[in-house]
Each structure stands twice: as structure tokens, then as C-alpha cells.
Image (cartoon, rainbow, N blue to C red; front, side, top):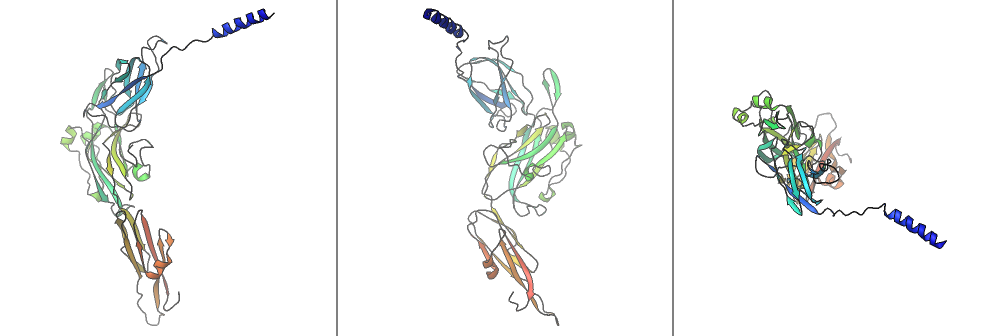
Length: 382
């Protein structure tokens, strides 16, 4: 009986073991790395982090005829480079795609073994040209009047107005918008984790200019752009020399800055290609931005100095305030203006009320001081 039992047990185990196949594939250990190069400048294409991808197909994959039909995506870094360290050795087709450039041909039959370096050249739709920036004081017409601001000016160039794609002549997409990007990290671009998303940087007419025009309209002068008049800008006709070089009119953007911050800044131009993809300027750093103290006084008195005062980090600023004198009128009881409240960053400061002055010392953030006055009978204890 035991012999029969062990016989059936052996047959069962043998049957089960035949259901399993041994995985004899080597682990993926090859590295593919390289750079997407701007054919116009010969430098790495300026982009934002993980904005678009390199697609690769393993054509030597033996699981189906012709190799794998599904692609793998490798994200492109902000500096135009890419890297994947966990790929199988084999033969691959490769294509940079979904970026702000004319679609290139697929690079075929790349042999991947150990560490392979494969660069790609693409022609961008757009190039930022004549880019300048300067620190300014926001004009009186702005809600940020008197505060630090950043003023940028630039043109957009279209290196090619038409190109051969897949055997057909294709016209460059319309220019959708131009935009400024500010970030508090070294990653700066259109990604939500690569920019500060406040309305002064995001909205049309502030940090963004919606264009939505064909390049034919831009270059023939039927579309014009009015620069900020408070910064001395004018509405100008398209310059014929610029038009001949495929350059747009000069754009300008004016945005406020906050004291004490370090900003990473660039501008970008977006084409109508379905996806939101920008061609960018290089990134520059703006720091040592002064802090501001906003000083106001209500009716019945004054504060000195008044308005928006800028200070470097660690600086000090004193303010004095005094009620206006009310002239005496015959047969009318005399009255006087007195200090009612001194709101320092929104909180009343009784000491400042009694002394008629207040000093901000070792400034490390923005502040406000607001003085109010009240009319009372002369010699009143109030």
C-alpha cells in the first residue's frame, strides 16, 4: 500500500514540476544615454524636466515577429540629456517625440550592449532671440506699485517656416503664446513642479501673452503687439529686416518679485502642436531682491516716509507720524487730531501710538505699517 502511495506522490510531483519553465533571460543591465541636440545652435536642446520623451522599440525581441511593437519611454531631462540603466541588450529603433521640434526620422537598428551613447539632432520650431532682462521698480499703474519687478524683452525666431516631414511639405504651427517662468528651484519650465503658479505669472497680459497667430500673419505685419507703455514700449510695425530673418516683433513681460527670494527665470514660446511644449531661453538667477515696507496714513495725519520703501536684508527703517493741526474757528469748540492706531503688520502697537514713531530693525521679510487718526475735543483725555 505504501509503495502505491509513494508511486502516486512521485507522479504528482513530476507532473507539477513540468508546469514550470525556467527563466533563463539575463537581467536587464545595459545603459542607454545621450543628448538631444538643437541642430540650429549645435547645443543641447533647451527644455524642461521630463517634458517629452525618447521612444525606443526592441526589434531583436524574439517574442514576436519583427520585434516588440510597444515602445518604452525614456524622459528627457532639462539639460537635454537622457539615461536608462536597465535595458536588455539588443537592436533598437529610437525616436525623440512629442517635443517642440520638427519630427525627425526614426533612428533604426541601434545596437545596445553594455553602455551605448546615442545622440539625436532635432530642429526646434522656435528659438528665443535678443533676450534681455533687468530689475525694475513696478510702475504706479500696477497694483504692485513701488515693489521690485522683473522686466524681460525678447523676440521669437522660427528657423524654418516649412519642412519636409514624412515626404510631405508641412507648414510651421501657429505661435500660441509666450510666457515667463519663475521657479525657486533649479528646475524651471512649464511643469507644475517647475514654476510658481500665481496669477501674475500665469495670466494673459501678465506673465503670459496669448498670440494664436500664424507665422504668415506675424511676419507680414498684419498682427502687432503693444508693449507696456509704462516701460516706454510702443506698438510698432513689423521690422522688414526682422521679418526677413523670421523674427517676431519684440515681446515684453513685467512681473513682480518678492524680497528675499532667489528666482530661477526663463522665457518660453509655445507652438500649437496639440501638446503644450515650449522652446526656452537659458535659465538665469535673480537674487538679492530687496524687501519692501508699505507705509500708509489715514486722513488727519501723515507718516514719513510714506509709500513703498525698499530695504536690503538686515536693513533698518524708522517711521514718524504726526496728526494734522486743525485751525481754530471762532465760536466753534476747538478739536485736535490724535493718533488712533499704528498697525504694524496688521497688529496695533500701543508704544508707537504714544511715541509717534516706529523702527523696523534687521529686516528679513516684507512689512507694513498703517497709521490712523481720530478727531477729538481739545484737552480731552481721549
